[in-house]
Length: 199
Image 1: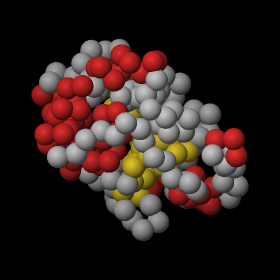
Image 2: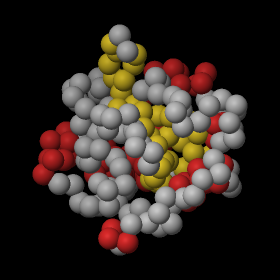
Image 3: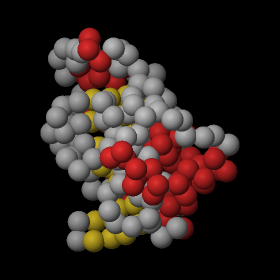
């Protein structure tokens, strides 16, 4: 078991577990020496070095500001790590059918459905986006992502060999977004409006 899973396991809600493909990926990342510890805790990346060139997995993220422990929905989400430098994070989501999905909760209030399962989530990471948010992942990586795309090349190669899948050129998001609709429902809010200029 990876060191990261050992750190996360005591915090997991009763009905959420770390998907096996994600655990395999974390164990591989750690075998590459891509985990590091500092005064803020333990961090693990799918790329070498300590620069933030994509997701940074960590057991230090929390749902504070989104859901409090006594609120509906709190026990159906589990944060995995930062997806940009502004406080957005990826999370496991136990959806209404009790399947584990992958989502983002953004620092500006965005909520985005990312992937149906762990292998798809890893395929998304392997594309090489510097940040994961609703206006980046629908495009092919830009010039700003070049360093990240290059840094993730070894992870892409491992993913292809391990699971027999590849990283697509760009990601497909869901419209309407099922995670946004769920958050709106449990918080008695309106779902985020679709910007017609984005369609």
